[in-house]
Image (tube, rainbow over all chains, first blue to last red; front, side, top):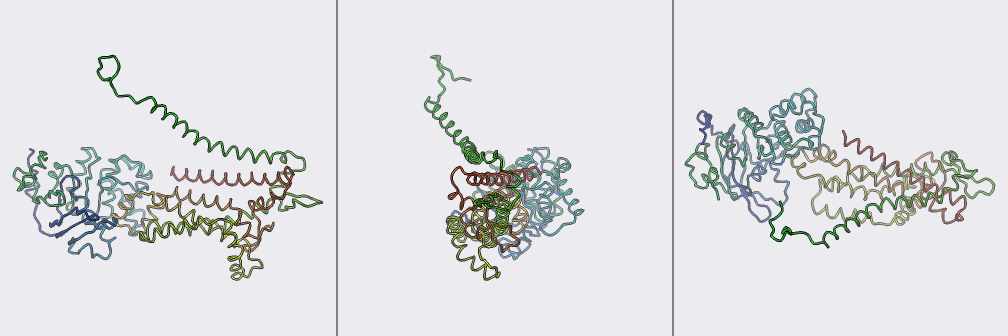
Length: 265
Length: 309
């Protein structure tokens, strides 16, 4: 196995809790998919969540920004606090969602131009000055490693981009409202490895500005990026520890080792 | 690669002959269904044109006069005049007013039903709107003649209640269910992922509606409005009863008018077959055909223009 990234050694473990989750339970109808999980996410860390399909990773993210409300069959129990405030009691849910950037696994370019896609969230909060928007759009597209490919056709439809480009478009869009928390749900699923590496570099930079939650099926990607990682399986936390433990040779739970090493089954 | 075989015949499973033939037959049938739409339209056009054609070549017919004269005296003994300008203006006024009233109302209803109301209210509203669409036009005409005309008369002080305003209101009420239900379908067809993506970006419900849904559903919405316009232009019975049926170029919204459709419905039964009057009425039919055709083609270009942008 490759050597541990050196950042692990220098990373200061500030225990400033950005997101606190206690006994979170989520059910769709009568089927419970998250069975009471408790953990914290620290400020300015990259928090990796790994686990097979149907383990509740995406649902968990949707609980955090409360887009779970969109599904009338979903019932949430337990507490989930962002900045010490319980999200289910938060009065202005739109404000909460603006704090959180969300990148969905299947890229959803809104049926607007590329420019409008990125300018969507700033415009929603009343940012209309063309010069401000221009700068912001360029910055976000650059961060998502998409600027060079689309700078000449910002007016064309975002939905006409290729899958990987749309995915980067959603990353640019998620960054456009300057979130404090960035949730990346399988962000690299349709992006080629080279571009993925470029975005990963950006993510390492962005960590100084925001907390990043990285949901990924690529355990190697989690190993490269995450400060701490959680192995979620069937709605339960199997193990949560620092990068070197989870991806090391001796995680506490054998299932973690098997999953990370690819001998799960 | 063919499967290995010992007998020389391929062992790869083949579909039975009847399945292949059946599929071909089905394909033919479906092709016929598709083509028949064109055949029907052409046949109708041909029939109407055949009935109207002789008058076009006759000596005492003048197309400019037909289109630009407001004088419609088809049964005059001394001087027969066929001018449909007043009828065209009547149709334009009544359907224009109807569309003007119906479009904001029905789009609002569609947005409310699809985005803002709860599931129970949604079901109720959809059923009620469909019921509204099922009311026969003659019943609407009756309501226009007896109920709304009185209200219009009282509210505006117009000398007669059956006028453009009355007809426009009745026609608008008839268009609303069509436009609303088709617009609602168009909005429903916008993938939920768009809504969720916008929601995750911190957009409010209203921002989602006007920044995402309306642009995404614009083609469907335009189609809905056009069907409404088509209904407004083509509607006969209700406008016949509700607009006063007076050949007259209106000077205000409270004047009575007659529409092209109502004119045909009222006079065709009394016009002697193959007479000039009869043929002129068919020509009015062609005119109606032409108006709806122009509206549809324009809309098609508009939609295409939006798409290319």
